[in-house]
Image 1 (cartoon, one colour):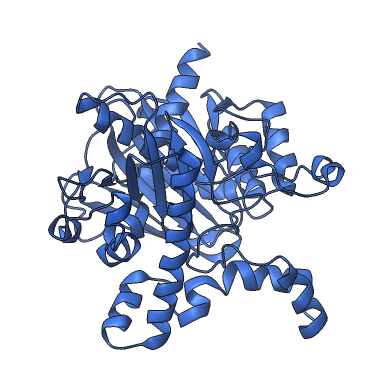
Image 2 (cartoon, helix red, strand yellow):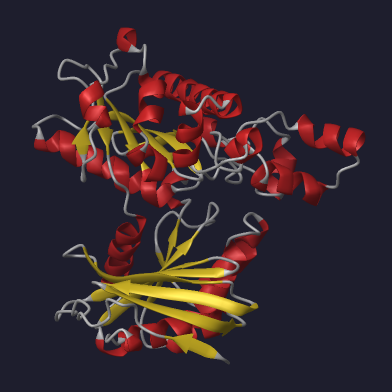
Length: 421
């Protein structure tokens, strides 16, 4: 394996040191990538993070960031085992050592847990095989997670490995919310139901909102909130008293809101129409709906920095794409308010939700009659942490809550690892 690794121009400065604390290594394995983060889940401190990309190719690249040091890599990364070896080498070259970092657990993000896993699970051979079997429901995600699990367990055989499922938070959805009006025998045989996604983020953010209200001395036992996770992938959830009542993603992450490259809700007969009229195959249609549609398909852009700039320059395609995006969001906010029987809070999170005030303003404008009053100055302000952007007299509190899925995974992995001692 040919490699090239060197520290950045900042490498003369020392990376942050790891104190005598229990740390968790969080891994997010994709088919051609491996994201990682080492952190203290109790102190909520990140020591290092990075990504290995282009796994399976001769020209793989990777980087690790810790303190002021960026440690890069380039070379062949034929599989996830080699990717994990690259990660360990990057740590050592940055002046850190995973073997000396007191790693007490490895937390693995797994997209699809089906109806089987409603909580994080210590990974043994049975759990590993169940995750592989659930790949039928998430063919782009679960097989990659299994590759990452196999690679990490090979390199860290003595450390507990914990699977944290994106779908776990939504396994308790009410039957009416999780059931499709599909032939029951077919649905049962092929495990077709609403599973949701981004559950780790929705759980984390909704808990942060609950903590905010509790700190104000308010009863949170029946708190009604909508969480809008708006990134390149986007989803909404309705949560009452800490329990999910509904969510926008379904059997797969394609359903629901308009996303960077995904259509979101669309008439399922589009598949048949494109097959009959355009002669397109199932895989071709699936690629169209998942990777060539959404904001990218509407205006040729998926990055909202580019989209908002294009709108200011008078780009009509970008303006229409924004209107379609916002229209879908408003439909979900309205329907979830009815599902919840009223509304106490709306939380925006993830890259777009946290950083694009134009989206938040468009989604909530003109809703004063429904008790939602945005404060324009607060909405436009750039700040960190949980913050309220609604007016003081708004019956519904609107918040920006930065999500931290890696921290949530690390905390859950640590809890499971300690419970198995």
